[in-house]
Amino acid sequence: MVEQIKEILLDQKIVEAKIAELAAKISTDYYGKEILLVGILKGAVVFLSELMKHLTIPAKIDFIQAKSYGAKKISSWNIEIKKNVDTDIKGKEVLLVEDIVDTGTTISLIIKELLKRKPASLKLCTLLDKPSRRKTEVHIDYKGFEVPNRFIVGYGLDFDENFRSLPYIAAID
Ligand code: IMP
Ligand code: MG
Image 1: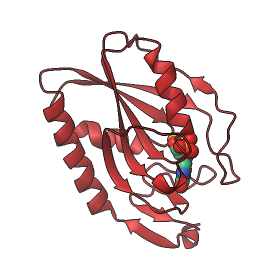
Image 2: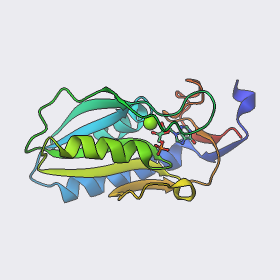
Image 3: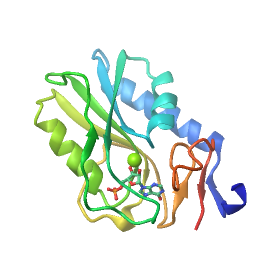
Image 4: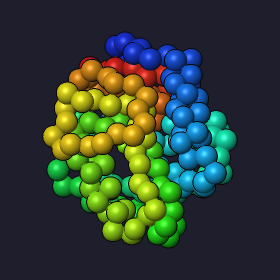
């Protein structure tokens, strides 16, 4: 399995330093407020866990899941919300936490869905951004790293459900 890893793009130290930096920025921007982190399952779980540890403002968490990649390494256009948030987000400061923004299709749909529930604010924080593949324009408020157009795994990101537990970001193509 690990022999499929072609190249480590971002090692654990670099990733974790960046996440601490993002958490500091978020804590400053939302100072005096409480935020609700909404992680996008399953890929954002590792990022969200690391991020929340570094926040110095009160934070609650929830999760949402939408259908995205299958085993075929292609973007599925038939996106549906498989699990919605449990929290009543009306009037809340909501920060969406995503692993990677690729075509932008999934995240746009999720944003549209959540805006219907009238949060006080809705911002987007993504660990990775693959801008070369964008099909739908997405405004990213907090971004960890831009990555090239390669298939990325690790730090929550999978290929066919494998590699999520790797503590670094790698390419397998
Ligand atoms: P989008 O709708 O094309 O932006 O797809 C976003 C979702 O696809 C992300 O939340 C990931 O779960 C998945 N995804 C996109 N690119 C990659 C990748 O390089 N590796 C693993 N998963 C990816
Ligand atoms: Mg995802």
